[in-house]
Image (spheres, rainbow, N blue to C red):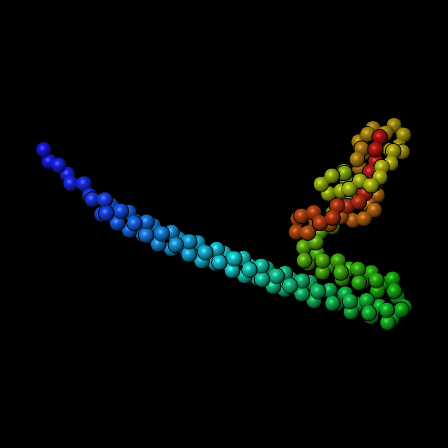
Length: 165
């Protein structure tokens, strides 16, 4: 029979202490690695926020630059008080063109069916036709304020009055 020699107690304790020491070292390396990774993520987050701010400022400056021509037109209209109606119409057209260039779309609402995704009903009116068939239920008969989409997303719902029965 072969008997295996069991390690002596001091050898076992020494080996265990060495393992504990190695595990402590490994734990500290992982901890330092985690701290560096966290620091890197926070740095990237700050950089992203700074770049987002710069991009927003550039976009705003481009819009403001285009709106300066509208401001110039207002100043000119105030100087030349004759033809104010025509001047204001031109300024309105100029402003509308700029906003459309940046992605603004007007929601057509007059004589359309009410759509709660695009319209906000602020009032109703009973159908005044004789023998009213009810086909015009929910038909928009008055637009109180226009609604707008910005690049296909609802920016402001059109405020309308609709026909009811």
